[in-house]
Length: 504
Image 1 (tube, rainbow, N blue to C red):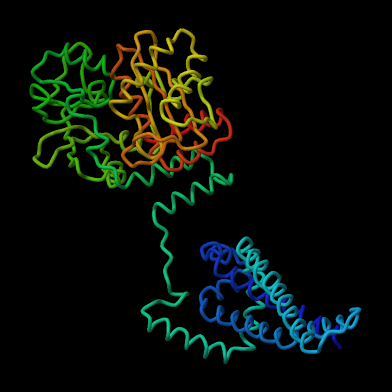
Image 2: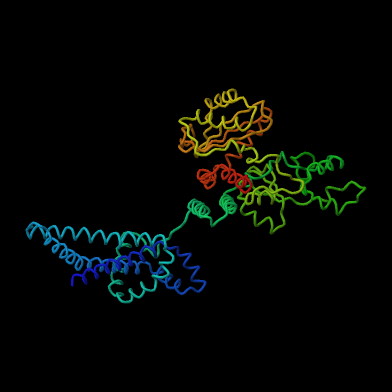
């Protein structure tokens, strides 16, 4: 008889675990995933979809099953275990009073039963339900619906009562509550998905650009008006032809005189197709209207408007109506896919990864302060690039560091200096195992340090490198991956991909 009671107790624990397993699975599973499976005709997915559509009722059914199993377990299991323990006292070589036997047996039975109930009936199934939410939901939906039909009356009553209390508290039932994923959460989810190997890093960078695309304004990506190429009606054709030959563009602003007198635009195809070879063209006759946009307009809407209307170039004006730049369809697309180059628009002579010295990339570095961190990284750079005066270089870097901290925030520092002895820019990259205290705008200790050395004669190039590093490391996913990269080569590959894919 006792063996039967113990077997029933174990069965109740396992049954309790099944209810817990299904309960956590249906709460954890993604409804979008179940919907996708249901659209493909999965019968189990249709059952699971029905459960998710009435989540409150089925959660109440799970709770009823758990409660019934727990009460039955206490009623059957505790006396059975206590009786076994009581019989065990008979084997002792000394006599024990009946009250002591009862108290000890009851306490031990309660502890053993609680342990088995918690481990086998709660913790283990809960972990499985969370980790295997989808398969458990698919396989458990039908048994759960069957159990619900058996106990429909009490479950419906309990569910209505609980819903009334929830609404009385001003809350929505679980089935009606909305789970809205914010943009930042989506970025994190995509980053975690990429880390698991199901999303290429290049595609992640494209998605990052897409997230930023909606908030980018025309004034942020336009070419400043002073840098725009233009043809002038006041200039002889030879000068305008020289502009076309030197700039090698397909479209040019057309001006009465200087850049402040814009009257339209000229397309090179019109010059080729409509003009006689030996005769100077009439630029005014070839003039095309130029679209206008505001510098505060989001470029997202132009991605549809420009192709639909055949617009490839637009004049950007500020709030006062003054022309401040030009915006091309290429500028807009580059915000999504990165830099685009044609045969006459070759890439710049450098990219960030070309400047980083492979021998001066290190991970798991350790330094007690920023002075030591800079010195260690400089030593690696000097070892990889002969001819650098380490003492003089450190003096230049540290003099600037004491005046203006190179900590730029988000755990990044960019100590730098200009040297007459270097022929081209070089960059060292170090990742520190423990954060190094650098004064920074957000007071976040530094773990990634970019040490930059540029020729004295190229101050603009140093500024461009600093700007490029800043634009890259503001990307949360890239920064997190740099901190998790297992090798220096992996760090360089991440930078190379981001340098190519992320819009500047």
